[in-house]
Length: 435
Image 1 (cartoon, rainbow, N blue to C red):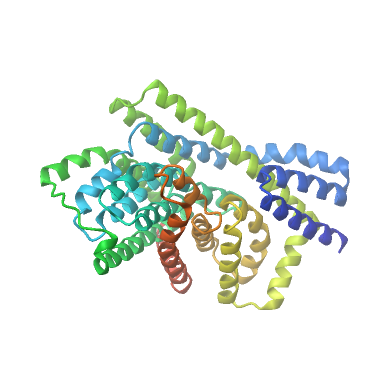
Image 2 (cartoon, helix red, strand yellow; image 1 turned 90 degrees about the vertical axis):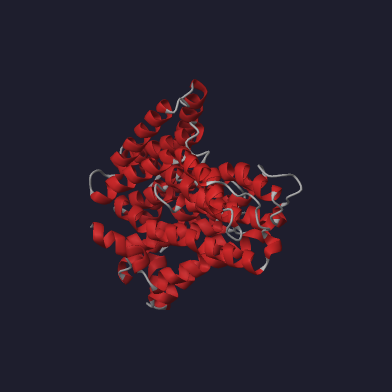
């Protein structure tokens, strides 16, 4: 019991440090080292600290992370994604709220090659929000569409969060990616439907655009987006067909992105340098955090805290529906204050024993978890996508305006989550075909 108490105290200390904005990797490693020292002794703690980082970093599947990051950064700096919003605008501007719809679909396309919500929101925010403001769209709708659309970056494959979830839970990354496709597409479609209905009922929210592009212009702009379509088809098609694994898909995608950028003559030294620097720094940061999480999971295992919490939860009831509703509340609250990666890595060791005992499919839970984490990216008071978007829009657009705009999208997200609960095949159907 003494070790279990140490584990509970360690868990509370980590959460407190994160609320104080201590870097998550530092908090996890320090608390884990102290906790293991108290349970096993300092010598054993040093031994574990020297072994786990290597054992974790040596996992072959982790090589998919820098590959997908390289693909996303190269696509961005190589200009392969810059035509997404322009193409969507020319084809959809005549719809009610067409520019906001174009922003959501542009985010979806960017998500297919980036895997990052923040990068998606920042890139589309620079392009789409000024265009919508120019056509007198309500700032709440303009910013809300981009901030929420950016959350698709971690849901539509490739997703760094899903890769890490797969590694920590030993779940097939291929099946996680395939399962997230249905939810990602459904989420984008739900956003679009909500925008169209709101703009149709209240035209002042999104005044009609006078542009009347010719079919020649519409066809011509597609030449700007073919790289994204090709990358998405090859990477996801290869994994879906079993031609290559997620790790191999990342390497193929990164190589193709470099080749396409070379063909389009956008592979400049500046773009390549920025791509490599951002890939290396982001990979190092993610690995540092993941190593901290590995140590923390080992600490909780030694302490027996994970089993203790699982037993407490199961004593309260074994109803799956009530458990998932409880997790929704937990993830929404944690998402308000802790970044998505920190929330995921803190909760995985605590919920895994419960998932095993209630026989909840890990593929379904992984997609559900990432969806909840992405809701946290736009939930006040600390919605990371909202703060990132604020840095790239006009100064008179306040955080309050953006948070007001995302509320409609949060409501849609909650509806999507409920549909995932009542209709789990929304996630599991495609993986059942592929497996």
